[in-house]
Image (cartoon, rainbow, N blue to C red; front, side):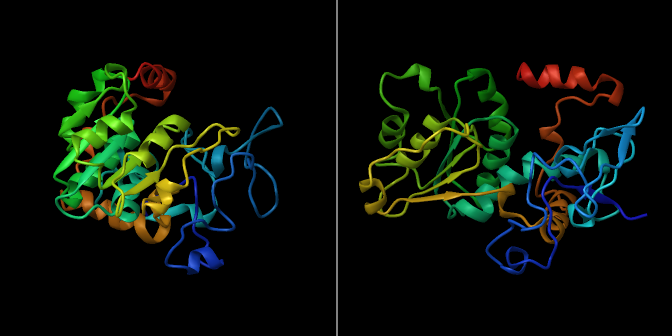
Length: 282
């Protein structure tokens, strides 16, 4: 009878990561895209005509019923509407936490968000909640800019509109660089730009996007020696079972507007239509 959010990463509460206040990278249940079976017996709980159907990232939520490890189910407030808060168990919490938990922008600071998809918009929302004075959205698709204003973005940069590197454009806009940047694209060039656009002395860049497996991050060591900080995050540094109930409460207290992230609601039977809309950026 409990209401839960299923999460693609988990929290066993027993391993060194789960016992550390600084990590959410559970040894047992961290995301593993190759594992399509239950940890206990190495078997699937789904089959069709005698053949196993594997569990996508341990959750398999595109079904009316599923089976998952207890550590991947976060118990939440039963009063929360499930058709709204379901979106908190992936991209929104990832972007929100990347800003609030990892970048930690001081009130009145400037924040650059690279990539204005769902994760980037959530990162912008986190900057808005934290009280940033300027939130600069960077995206190659200018059609996303107007929508991004609803999430706190105050200015926009389309790299295609400039002859010079984006980090240089941002440095000129902000008198030397932004205080914080959050990269939500997975593009290695955007990752480098996000790091190099932060202000020396105190700037912090946070990488959220997942790069190509062969990608390499290259920057001059002086960028570190000049006291810029580069951080990475996974699921916004949220521990699923411990922290997601609190994110749901942010929504219940109207401090986090989940509705503005939802553009369409479609039934299971039209799930491929939803994928088509996602690929078109609609």
